[in-house]
Length: 605
Image (tube, rainbow, N blue to C red; front, side, top):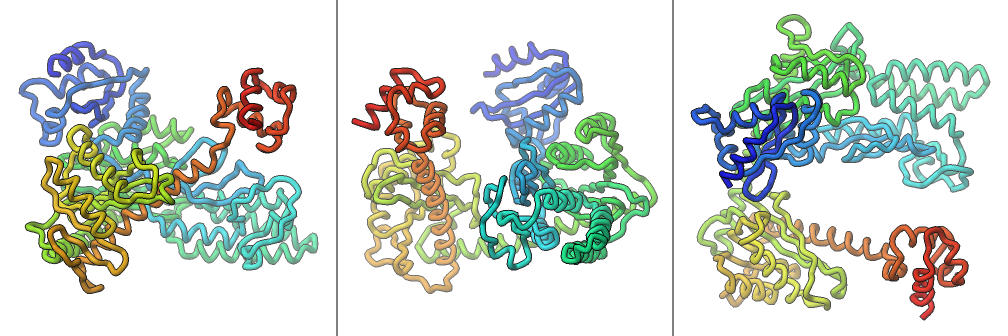
């Protein structure tokens, strides 16, 4: 492996690009960029080079390097952002769980758009706003929008003449019922435009537009519409009055400050629109050990503005960035017009940075306090569990298993993991039952436990061995799991929890253990069992839904997805396809005679 790595390093080009470092399993563990790939990547391996502990640990694990050449350094930065988003490498500074931050989407690709919450930004013609770290504040904003602008929240497909009866939302004053034709599309489009301005922080512009519409409606003697517009203006004015005036310059700015203690880091972003504080978000980052504050902030900016739906013309930062010119060039390309990144040393902007930094420190302190409290509770629950079921030590890693099926169909198994008493969701695994085709929970549990332990020796995803296995079920399920574990090379404690009266079964003990309902050990077991059940049921429902969408046509030779859709489009339904003659089938685009004959034979045996 070292010889192959040396050969790889010898062929590095002296050109700009991004590089990916991989471990012995081929997993990407670090992504970087460089103006000269040869100089940058080789610097990691130079003898006598002084590295931080983090970089030294990275170099120890590198077994292969790949690279992608680009034309310029700014293209290398863009590529680096995309690769970090894709691989989330262990040794990069990362926004914690950034894939989970929600966005608001205004579905402008629809004739009557809605405001929905989504986790992904797509190039689909819709307008996106976010990301929002505070999902509660975001949902309150959605409620306010529906109250003020009365956009529909249902998923009905609307387009032409609408004739549905208005739903309860209309009668509650939260929808103008486009499904019933109670609002013209042009008038609804005005509501959507005002909603987008509102989400952009342009409340003053929205009020100006609404007041003009209100006066116009009054002149036309449309008093009901004028009253509705007046109520919208009053609601927005009430919202604006709550917003803190930050700047007299009436400009758009983001203020970004980092707080770091050498182990963890928090970044606070103040979002200022037209001189008023529209919102504030704080983000925690991972992989920040041994990193400087300017490096942490630089990595945050790249990841945050890569997916941000709006980049302001000015970003005020708490640190002096080493790559300031490059960062400004990239942000300018992203925005489409000039962006300035400013590190103030005095004045009002310095005060804004100070306020953001204090908020970041406060958020970090709250997070530490909450984590400490949760850790204390988890430790006491684990001690109680150890005493209750007679374990020799506190179980650091607990795996809980459940089976979900309906009469043996679409059977699945789940494995959820708790580490130190809290869920480790990245470690959750699911199994589609392969060897059992009837309703036999014992056999299914045997397959799941067997496959999990067999994978421990050759699959890195299953490398960690649990201290305790918790089986959902009674004595029978427990015995099956114990037998599989005893036939393996691992020493693992196994217990089971039955739903009937929440009895705990332990090997080599005749009677089950019945704990008081308020027992912290029982509460922990119930939480793990319920989580395993939820995870299994979600996978089972997913498989059932996929199975329900399968068509009889899918199994016919020569009929793929394209021809199946063409047949249904042509004849309206499966019954219509069944009634079709050979000549009618041949009139379907791309249909061959052999495929048409196969359809007739399959549907009319």
